[in-house]
Each structure stands twice: as structure tokens, then as C-alpha cells.
Image (cartoon, rainbow, N blue to C red):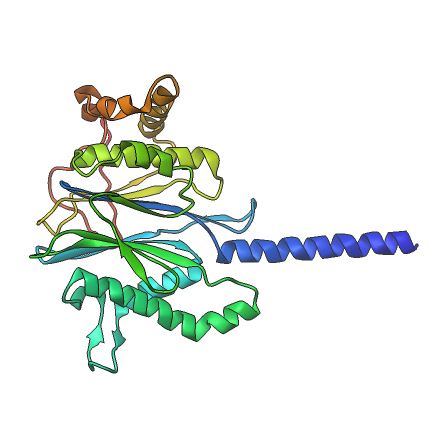
Length: 305
């Protein structure tokens, strides 16, 4: 009888622990986001998977684009605690009152991109002050990070990574990319193939190979994948697209190039990316009128049969 009771309590405790772990998993859902800044422009990408265990997987957009045509365009990608990241994006969209200046501050009225990045950090710290203790009492870690990039007309294009403390770093020519979330599987691809002088769509292709490497190695990252391509001094994204599950060209292309380095030196990969035949059959700038940006949806696929 004692053994049966003990076994029942152990089973109940195990079930309770599993439920709590699943709840923390949703709160601390990971993702993979990247930003690549080359001379020809900015590429940003993010997956959409959120999970609280193997039987509770959802899809949420994590790459958001804000623009004022011909004046400014900004994109923000998030990783970590979904409730916190959504609160940050919503606050930046609606704005907040700054008691020191008396102004209602949003991303769209920041005077510079650096000041816009500071506003992102300020909102992160404000939410931590308001909710940090309650989250800690529920055994939920305040874990969130952002990639924030774009351009205000008259300035240079910039890309920042913002940490959970609200501080941030900026992408440089020496290391022209930043990552957040489950980045360890895709980082070697970017390390070996990305350089500041490369073609912007070659940079996008390398980014997709980096995504595919992560998809194959980490179940917390999954399709759909949201993409943005922005060229300098346009303040209008050239490409905003979502790669849905089942698009065969993405998998065939990415995995063919991932397999090639395994059979030879990785330094040959950038040359392979520049082959006209591969470039012709993969992502190209979308012609015609631009589609709505928030929420970003483009119905015409960039893949050609």
C-alpha cells in the first residue's frame, strides 16, 4: 500500500512538474532571428514558432515592420518571452508619455535611429520594473531580446541588438550581422559566408541557409519564416515575404548548398551563391506596386516555377 501511495505521489509530482515546465516553455519560447547589414542594404528574418511542449505549438509573427513612406522604415524582431515582446511592440506602436520632455514618444517620431533604439530599451526596462517581480514570483524569467534596424531618410542604415536589460550594441562592417534566439546552429554559416561587400540577395540566401541549418537541428524553431529586404535611401522595403511550410524551392536550394560544403571547402560557397542560374531561380525583388506592410503580407510568391 505504501509503495502504491508513493508511486501515485511521484507520478502526480512528475505530472505537475511537466505542466509547470510547459508553462515556462511558452513564457520563454525561443525563436531564431537574424539581421544582415551589407553595403547594398539590410536583410532581416525571423521564424514564427512558439511552443509550450511538444503538444502545444503555435505560430506568432515576430518580425514587425513600421514605415512612413519616403521618410523612415524600421523593423523589429523579437526572441524570448512572448508576452513581454508583444507588450514592448504594442507600447512602441501606441507610444508613451515621457515625463522629462512632455512628449508622446513612439518609434515613428524618434529624431534618429539611435534614439529609436534607446526608446526600445526604455520600454523594455519600464516593463521589467512593472512586471518583473510578478514574473519572478511565478518562476518565469524576464528573458527577451530584439533586433532593431532600418533607416531614417538623411541618415545611414543601422542595425542594433537590444538585450533584456535595455542596453544594446550596433552591427559593424567587421561583423555585418546580428542574431538572437537559437543562433548557435546558424552562426557558423554566417561566420564563413557573410561579408559587407556581398550582393544583398546573396546575403539573403546565406541567411536562409542559416535558417535551414537551425530548422534541422532545433525543434523550437520552425516555419513559416518572415523576411524583409531593404535597400538604402528608399525607406520602402523591396521585399516582405513569408515562407510557408511546403515551399519546395526553399528546401531544395538551401539544403543543396548546405550539402556542398560538406563535400568540399566552405570557401567555395559564396561563389556558388553568385552563379546566375541559382540567382535567377531564387528570390528576386518584387516588381509592381508595394503591398501593405503592417501586418506585412505579400500574396505573390517570389519563387518562379
